[in-house]
Image: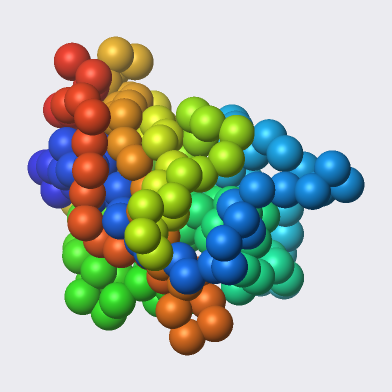
Length: 219
């Protein structure tokens, strides 16, 4: 069934999320002054979402999610600061979440990434859900270190990528339950970013330090 196959593809290809980006910041910009945040570890989040479409209705076995809130780019996302990198990663994860829950590439297109990279991400995490759908799902990047490190013009940030899939998948009018042991996949990864043309650019190169958690890469 398409729905289950799509969910399988989603969990089986989580490593596609892991980009290699580069950023050209002034020397020392990856460190923070005493008045700024010095620890960005944990889930990379954004705060603002566009809810103008109407009241959000999570997916059910009868219909796909309706009026899914769209992630809004943070005001500092293009700043040559660690906070800017953090915002870029938080927005990227939110765009993936939107694609999974809607099947649309609207928010993926807003991610600062090469067009080929956007297409590849959407092929895995959005297109399978244009007709089929799954229960409410989410993608997050959990940053392991307080700050990124720098090598040449590349800023690198170790993280865990986690995709949580809803309890069911629907295709061709049929709903199928997804067992609890197959609704989450985690990967150890390293995000790479570069600062180009006054914005952070996320590369689509993947650098994984371990394979997918056993038992979670199939639905």
